[in-house]
Length: 189
Image 1 (cartoon, rainbow, N blue to C red):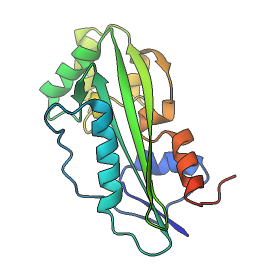
Image 2 (image 1 turned 90 degrees about the vertical axis):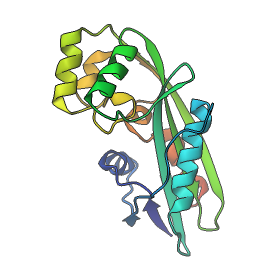
Image 3 (image 1 turned 60 degrees about the horizontal axis):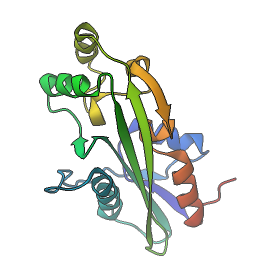
Image 4 (image 1 turned 60 degrees about the vertical axis):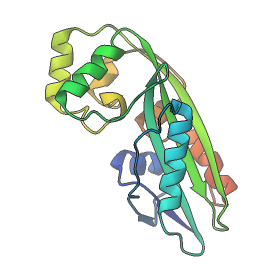
């Protein structure tokens, strides 16, 4: 059996390595990641993870692993910022408040069965000053990141508390991923 990572994310490859796994191949799925009208954040992130998994062609004896992470403030989905102004607005919204980091994992086993799990982590940011937000935006670290921040980088200093999966906030919840890969038949200790 071989493992296919349906992602081009170096963070997901690194996190997979923490489970002692290296993907036999990676494939970046091309899907529309726009939320549907009135779609709830939990439904959105699960739909996208499953869509990524099913978008990658699977050969016999291949297991496909896909994930998606989004930030939710209430029912509002914070995806990847479009530009510096969007990133600034996201950080201003997150400043001094709690939000949910939803990280979904989808696995298609060698027989073609799709299974998925969701990790919901509560993250609270301390209040951020305008100069801190400007410096973070200027660093470029938040570009291309759900909610406009990378917890494994400078933004970790913004976190007042976290309740849940740190690896899920980075981009791949390891407990859920391990369980799904074991169910798919991959040998994991």
